[in-house]
Amino acid sequence: MLSSINDILSAVEKLEGLLVELARRSMQTPSLSGEEGKYADLLLGYMRDLGYDVVYKDHVGNVVGELYGTEDQPAIMFNTHLDHVDPGSLELWRFDPYSGEIADGKLYGRGAADTKGATAAMIIAGAAVAKAGVKLQRSFLMTSVVMEEMGECLGMRHLMLETLKERQIQCIVSGEATSLNIAIGHRGRAELEISTRGKTAHASAPWRGVNAVYKMAPILLELEKAAEQLPEHPFLGKATMTVTNIYCKPGKYSIIPDQCTIYLDRRLIPGESLQQVVLALQQLLQKNGLKAEVRPREVEEQTYTGYREKAVKYMPPLYIDPQHSLVQTARKAVESSINYAPEIIKWDFATDLGWAAEHFKIPSIGFSPCEEHLAHTENEYIRLDYLKAAAKAYAALIVALCC
Image (cartoon, rainbow, N blue to C red; front, side):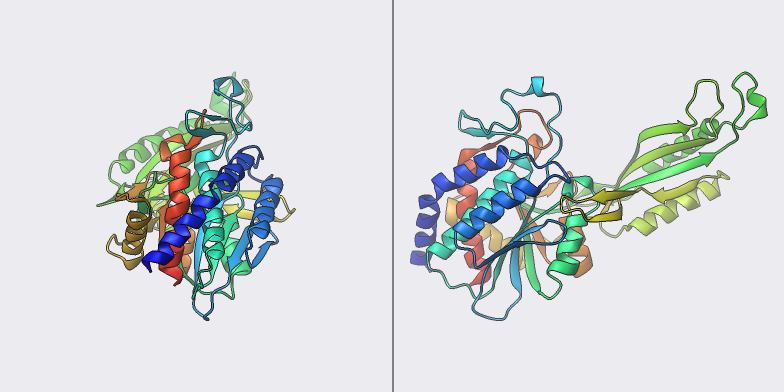
């Protein structure tokens, strides 16, 4: 097995030039949520050229590449997402966010750390395993989904429920940022709305109306107190709840508003569900004699393929025991391939990996060359030494899980 691993690592090294090229071209291909088509085609083209057995995109635009296994066993899935957030103020960037500039051993660009660097490394790792002539017992699936940044798990849901519904998945490895460490979980995320109702009137005679903003005031105070009492997970940390936005209607300066709505960001720990969170808020208001409507935030999204769907802003929490065999296998693969002892960490942000783990009970972890503190920031980059190291570690992990 040692000689086989050495052959695979050698195959990765031979593809390092192509790895940097793919990563750089990825940075040069904008892929905002709902506009990922050109980037998806770029990845499909590279996987075809690199010898993946089958490559395709599904009806919502998710990308799938597969290396066939020799046996009818559940497949191993690596996963990233195609979309990235807006680059923001261009004057804050050292280089154009879509230039793919390389400086000081770093590749700069929007999406470099979230998750285009990892995507390139995963694709090259799979290709290296194939070129080394390794016979996989389990199939290897390389997947990248649409619209992860939107927070509704739309791409992941359709990938698992429809595109891969006939497939059994043994485990999932996410490319969300871990700095070459192993992530075993994160808190979930829900966006909620609370609305109060009143009655409009001319602002010169407020006694003729009922101000919905004033009705919201005591609710805000109760929410602040309730947030202090939320539960805590021993590894993932405390559940949180905070108001992120407030608006009223009609919103005119001379009219008493008859509707006020606040938005909440609620971070959930394992054991909490969206339904439980909504019910708890409803009970809190009833207990204090406050009238308001509580609901998850729902939006309508459209993917780059034209598919439209109403979706709830919710990402479930994720946690896997650090002693789980998947975690230990990943740790050994990283250590043996790049001579680095990875730490066991958590993500502060949420990912759509939690949805697959929750609904299908699939063991899931994260390993990535990307760095979490760089995600969504100006001057986002990926270290080239991390990129190359991750490709080796991914290749070793593919062999460890599929052979």
